[in-house]
Length: 156
Image (tube, rainbow, N blue to C red; front, top):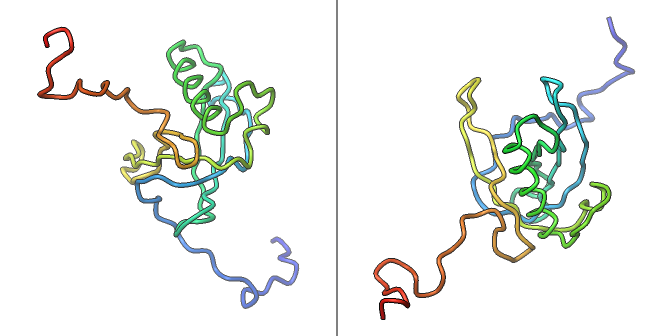
């Protein structure tokens, strides 16, 4: 048995189940960060909590987990690239501590993916950009005039 210290449900709004955020771009800030060990114990990841600060979903949270220490070089390369995009989006190019990334507005591009364990949808952050800027984690765009149907410069 546990004491509930005279808890009164009449004085507290009930929590509600939240569906994943709709895919889209949101203005957010990093509100929390923590370096945690991986489940397998062979590395560490930086968990960043993003809080949406504008719009209909203000106050909602999204997370990124960056595997900065891992046996897989590719996993680390991907995580470092994502961290670079976040740093560029908040204008902190050489952070010594993750707290330097906190409370600076940036744009996050949120998508949806199906979870392997239960088949439900969850959010995934697909990209980062300066507030009002272009997404930093996307495929490079072709140069102007290099789109489909245009003649390459060397064939003109």
